Length: 244
Image 1: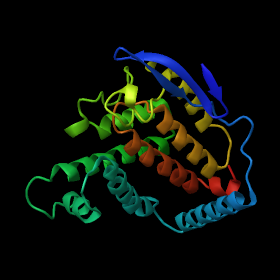
Image 2 (image 1 turned 90 degrees about the vertical axis):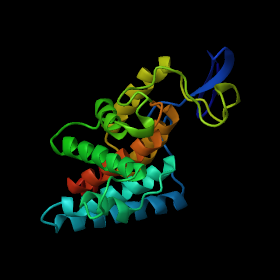
Image 3 (image 1 turned 45 degrees about the horizontal axis):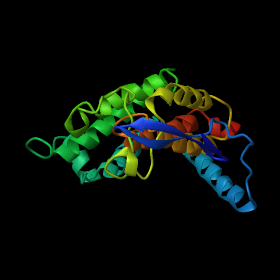
């Protein structure tokens, strides 16, 4: 093992060759994050924006009026990670059946993103915690059909994956081996429920999830849905005013 201040590299064998896989440090950070004057100013501005969002939500008779467009815009943007070309107008036209004929693959993929995010928001609104189980459920909806349907929808990966390159041996980044996923994800789930600044928690959880890369496909799309949804739901509950 080689340990540095930001995590641990471990030697593992994948596809017959030795590779270095990265294990991220546990959360919360130890020692705690130290904010410079500049980064504190940025954080304060983010919290002010969330406070304004909280105030706007309080004046609305139905939070869904705010969430409706946000959810769909976020689905369009997150789907672009996978190369989809659908626009927000095309998605809305598909939903109101204003365009005759079957929707294109890209529109269907974005529509599944909307379904996955709505599922998460509805479960959380009903008291279900943001958890690994909920993330698996959302992932199962996200990759229910289409190009990701063969990538174990709704299941954490059971094999080594990598980012960049043609194999783990020449990859730009190799996430934790599947044997370490349980410990990494358990720590992440516990961190999600610790009291902390919502902006900092969202940022750290986002990076941690992407580093763990627990699914064979759809990691980027899923985390871009779950993270904003968590902040929005927190704003609706007044978490920003309480500073949690």
